[in-house]
Length: 322
Image (cartoon, rainbow, N blue to C red; front, side, top):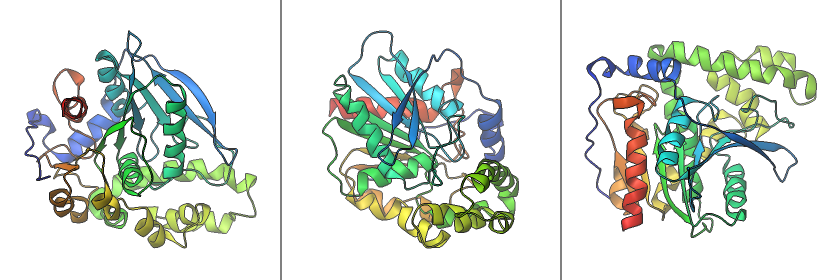
C-alpha cells in the first residue's frame, strides 16, 4: 500500500527525539492494568512467562504484545496498549522473552530479534485455549522486527491471526546497530550494554564451557555483545550473520496479513533502511506510517494514551470492517 500520511501531532515539549524517547522510557507510568502470570514450557525445556490482562467481559479477541531489547511485559509501552485494548473488550497477552520476566532462563541461549520460533509457540498456546477467534500481534522495537519476520517467513499462519502492528521497527538490524553505536546515541548504547552484560554475568558460572571470562571482558560495545554472545548462543556465525538473517526487511514482500509499521522519522535508533517505502508500495498488506516526530517508542499523546496505541486499535478495527 502507499505510505500512510500520519496525523500525529506531539505536544510542543515532545518534539525532540531525545526528550520523547527518554520521557517515555523513564518517566511514563500506566496504572490500572492487572496482570496474571502464566508460565509455558518451550520445546527445548526452557520457559516463557506470559502476563495476561483481561477485558471486563469475556472476549473472543486477544492481542499478543512483544517488548523491546531488555524490556518486559511491565514496561509502560506494553501496559499502555494492554489497558487500551482491555478497555475496548480485547484481552492482552504480554510476552516476557527468555530471561526478561525477573527470573533467569534455564539455557545458555536467551532471546534475539529473530527468535520467531518462540513467538510461534506463544501463538499456538493462545489458540489452544479455544477462546479466541481473532488474534492480533503488536511488537515494539526488537519485538516489532520479530513479528514482521514471523508473518513474512512463509509459514502457514493461523486464520485467527488478523493483523500485526510494529512500532519503532529496526527493519535492518545492521543499520540500526550502526546508529546505536554512533556518538549521538552513546548514552543509550551504554545503558543497553550495561543491562545485557549484567544479565549475561551469571551464565559465566552456569555455562563455563560456552562463555569464558576473557570473552566476557572483551565485550565493549553492543556489536561485541552480538559477536561474543548473541550470535554464538543462537546458531549464527557472528554479529553480521545474525543481523543479516534476523532482519525483517527481506521478509516484508512476503507478508500476507495486514501489517502496520509506525516508524518516526526522528527516531535516532533507525537507519534509512529501516523505512521500507518501496516494500510498502509493492505489498497491499503492508502499511507504512512515518510520523515526523516520536523518537524511539516516544509517540506521546493526550491522556497518557500514546499515538501508536490509538493507531493499533484503529488498525485492528479497520481490518475487522474490511
